[in-house]
Structures are given as structure tokens and as C-alpha cells.
Length: 92
Length: 316
Image 1: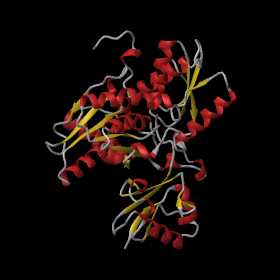
Image 2: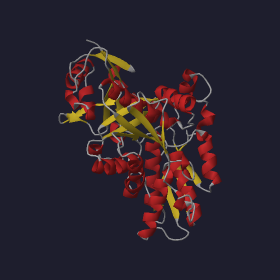
Image 3: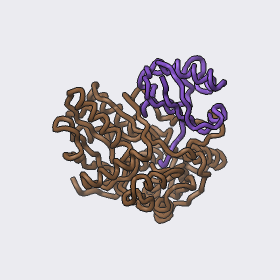
Image 4: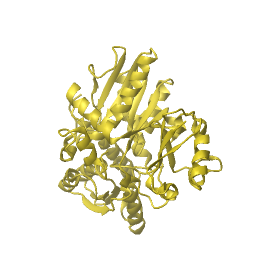
């Protein structure tokens, strides 16, 4: 099972500068475990005390996982996962 | 009523316009809340007037005072208008990578501009503005990201207007920036329609905007309360450009690029309702018109070229 994970600039030191990597897992939690086994240290950058860090947003197929199933969000082959830091964004 | 005592009094009461051709089915309808019809052409007139009124009431804003605000566009333009009609000065802190029209409009309305670095986008503008505010206690720092008068404008204005025009509303879709629109209108609508879905469309920018040095520099607006939202979508430049052009070509509505992101989420929700065999009345926000984005070329060139042109800019 291959899921494309898009990595933000700030986490690319962990992925040897790759913008996107492949990982597997039937849930987001399992995917993060797999990411961490491939790229040591990633898990700690994404999670804190077993929960998603406050300034990390993760989207499955462009939808925020906090409004899906959180770390239990189910994943299937071909899904796309995007990791982004929370920022103030654009023009307000 | 079409007569007002002043420009500021004419903010709000914008039309809600049906989209008969973009709606996915006869029983799944899209409705555009036309915030471009405000005095300076964006939804931010509501925010600006509400924050200025509130600061005046609380005695923070006195004649001749200087307002300071981190803003790369619409809020600045709206505040500049409010400052002009009420007799204040305005200093805007804005990222250097915003469209030239915005800068021209701000200067035209008499605002002073302090540039913040492009890398980091509004995050940097907020940080720089907070620093300036700390050093200049005389400045009135309205701070749209944390000022309850921002969301209150939508709780007392945008929300009630939409409900009055569309009592059968099932979904409300708006952009997520300061979160003021979604928090204010979302709370009001849920109080009156408990089953309503409140949906956020968050623009996804090019990498430059997410260029933090450290994850702890991340930012969540103080106004944000996730419990108001039902779902939250991240929409990239390409989908936003496609949708804003579709809105122009199919329904004749000329909107700014962030509206494309919101429409993209609204259409996705509409298609789900069709698939699930549900009726839906989906109201979404048209934040502003397309005028300020003409220089980006997104309305004329090929979608690919237009999207590339937006990379590294703050397009919403």
C-alpha cells in the first residue's frame, strides 16, 4: 500500500530534502509510525504526547484530519497526505 | 432600505445571489453572499468598522489616534477607509509579496505601509506588527486575528443576513484566515439551525508562505475555535483559479481568487449531497471582486501559467 505524503520545507531535513515521500499504514497513526521508521525523528516533529502538535496540520485528500478521525483517520491506497505548518497565511 | 447616513453605515446588507448554472442539481443549490458590494469592495469592511466602533466605545480610539494593523490587503483598505471617515491615521504592516494594486489602494486611502519579509507571509507581518505595537504604546493595535469585534461583525451582520435570506440553509462555506467570518457567522447560524454544517476553505499557498524557521513559530489565530467548524478543506492555487474562472464564465460573477477556493469546497459539498440523495442550500462567501488581482493574469492566461504566477505570492 503506497500513500504519497507531501512534506513541508521545514521537515525536509528529515527526508533528505525530498518534497514528497511514500509511506504506508491503514490509519494516519500507522502512517506516522512508518514515516518515523523511514525518516528517524519525523514522529516527534508531528506528535506531542501522542497527539498532533498544535502548529502541525495534516490533510488527507485535502481535508483536515482534525475533522475526520484525527490520528485514527483511515487511509487507503492512493490517498494523498499533506503535512503543513499552521501559519497566518495570506492577505487579511 | 437603500439610504444611509454615512459610508460606514452602508456596510453590510449585501445581496445573496443564486447560482442556477453552477448548482449541482435543482435540489442542491449554491448561493453567493456578495461581500464585494461593501464600500471598499470586500467583506473586511464589516471587520474594520466593527473593530473601530468597538475601540471608540471602549475609549481606546481618540481623535487623531494612529491605528496599527498587520494586513496585506483587504483589512488594510477597509481600515484606511474607516480611519479616513473617522479622522485617524493608519499604519499597515504587510508582506512585500502582495499585489501592487493593494499597495496602491492603501496609499490612495492615506495609509502608511511598513513592509515585512515575504518569507513567512502574514506570520511575519503579525510578528513585526506585534513588535511595533509593544514599542509604541500610543498606537491602537486593533489586531483582527484576536479581536472579538471581528467575529462579532459576522455574528450580528453576515450570519443573520444569510439566515433571513435563506431560512432553508444547510451548509455555510467561507474562507479561513483570521477565522472571524466562520466563527461569527458560524456560531449564529448554528444557534438557529443546529443541524447546519460549517465548512472552512483554507487557501494552500506556495512553499514560501510556509517558510518557518521553527515549527514553534506556527500561528493559530486567537479567535479560532475548532468546535464551530464541521469540516476544513485545504485548497490549492490551481483549483482556486479554475473555480474563480468558472464563476466568471458560467455565472458572470467576477470575484477575487480566494473566492475560488471557497467555491471549490462549496461545489465538493454540493456533489456529496447529490451523491447521498440529500437536498441542500449551500451559502458561500464572495470575499471581494477580481479587480485587485487583474495584474496576476489569472482571468486571462492558461490555468497552468496563471497558477505558476501565483506561486510565492499571497493570493488570498
